[in-house]
Image (cartoon, rainbow, N blue to C red; front, top):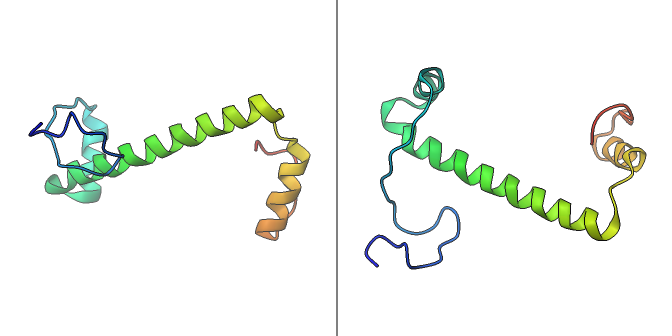
Length: 94
């Protein structure tokens, strides 16, 4: 259990573990330009955490839609306008 694989940690928790990843040269260059060579792992960790959060949110929305049906685009646009103080943006995707 030294590497933490037998324990259920949440994303962003637990000990670190080294892996090998493959990125395109352009993606790696862009990351290094933002964070330098020594910041790549931390950058990828945060990116992975954000993706997990998005995946979880997508699953939650799908579950909600299955139970309640999809959201009304006009109602979403009206609420977005109310929250942002702008026009309703009725033609934009929700």
